[in-house]
Image 1 (spheres, helix red, strand yellow):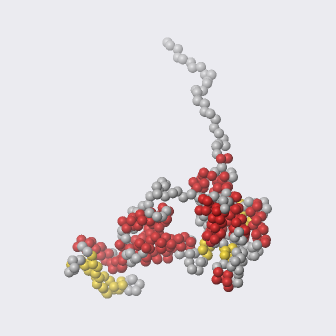
Image 2: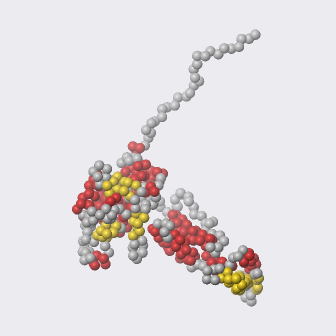
Image 3: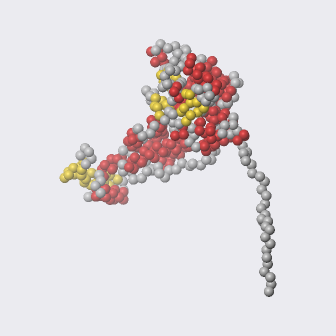
Length: 433
């Protein structure tokens, strides 16, 4: 069994003998190895001695437990991420990896997992809260918690040090932070931006994409995932079906990942205005080179300079630089076209200056605001947006719901106090004897 001896430097060494193990981790009968572990205090040594004896009695492998405990957090992070491959969307997995790389790895990546204490995690979260949104901190803590859960399952540590660390879910706005505000554009402002991209930037295809985004309310990944077959441009009830998303991985190969929308209700059909359907028909007839292929991307991406040079495309011609084999990259269009158009139009007084902070996602908000302000019922708009609940739509856009929906469709009448019911029955009193 185990025993403790005192070292010359004042520390204590726990010694024990355990079964040798083969390459598969199974004990080798009749073969033993001597193990030691050094601790700072006699009390810690006695505790460790008891723990080792208990583990040996139960058929455990104390040195393996020590090895697991001394593994850096990065080891368990790798195990966690590898286990998620194929179980969740690649874009979600990439997001988790990015949270680990940016927020967790610099502080804990190289530390032995057994050395990470609840107080360390609490200090780390406090540091993150100083300069990041609550949602980012919660997501990062969630990733760390699940990585630590791997270490607990492997018996490298007894308890998860993140369990006791909580992040306030108070809806109160922090005093040092301005509340985030959406920046929706109205119909005329969207048209001005699209016209600028089409005329001044000489890219009517991206101009149409901006218009489409602003008048369909699709998320960026949903727009990137559209194929020609998703359009129904009949003259009576034109619509677009949303059933897939495409996102580009943030890797050197920029691989496209095709997936399903974020929730079941995100798979939907969104009606299109007649004029927009007419513009799309004209686009497919006169502009799109692959209009006859139902699986072709609806809106194209842009070639990089190397590919364009190989294909002998003109760098100075935006239309010649379009990549009809790959989807539009909304982030790219935002940076090179949409955002620059906002700035130029604000400089000339066409748009108010506060619209220069509008994001691509604000085109989705624009669709919601225009629809609600125009009198569409919020439940219908919620379905078009693919929101998981009607409550989400109300919480986000309640201030924009048209006054037409205000008041009561069946107002109640002024109340009248109740009185005793009248009756023709005459009470008969008992005659006195």
